[in-house]
Image 1 (cartoon, helix red, strand yellow):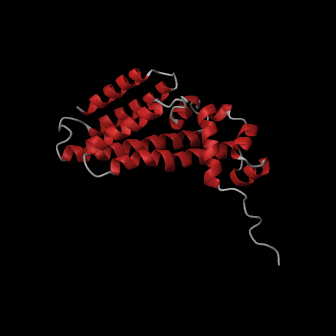
Image 2 (cartoon, one colour):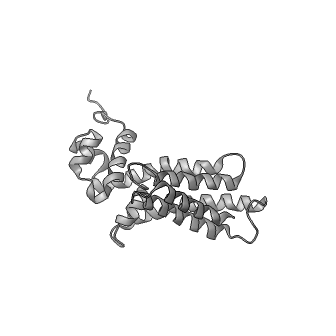
Image 3 (cartoon, one colour):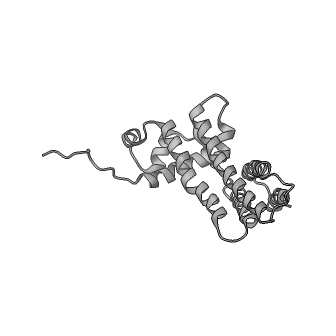
Length: 197
C-alpha cells in the first residue's frame, strides 16, 4: 500500500516562519531575496513553494505569525491583574523597547506600512490595518475600564487616546530605526504617556 498524504515535512512551520520573519524584519519585503530566505529558513526552494506558494504568500503568513506572537504578547499585558492604566503604560513601554532595539529593526508592521505603496497590495494593507486595529481596540477597552473605575478622567476619550497612543507607539518603533539616543526615546515615551494624565 502507498503512503497517504505524501512525505512529511522535514521542518516545523512555526520555526521557519520565525526565521523568515527575522529576515523580512531586517531587510523588508522587497529587500529579502528568495535565496536569502531559503538560506535563513534552511529549506529548499521546492519546500518553500509547496508550503507557502510564493514569496508574497510567505510574507502574509509571516505577518499573521507576528500578529499571533509579538502582538499577542503586547496585548497580553493589558489582561494582567491590577491597574488598567498601568497596563496601558506597560504596552507603551513594550514599544519603547522595540524602538530601543540595538539592532534597529523597529516594528515589522510599521516597517511594512512604510514600505507598502498605496494600492500596491490590498490584502497585505488590510492585514496590516487589522493588526494595528486589534492593538488599538484592546487599548481602548482597557482605557474604558480605567475610566469606569476613575483611573482616567471623565473628560478623556478612550477612543481618541487609544488611536493617538497606537500611532505614537508605531512612531516610536520607526524612530528607533534612526539610531535615536536612549534619552531621545525616553522623551518620546514620556510625551506619549502624558496623554493619560
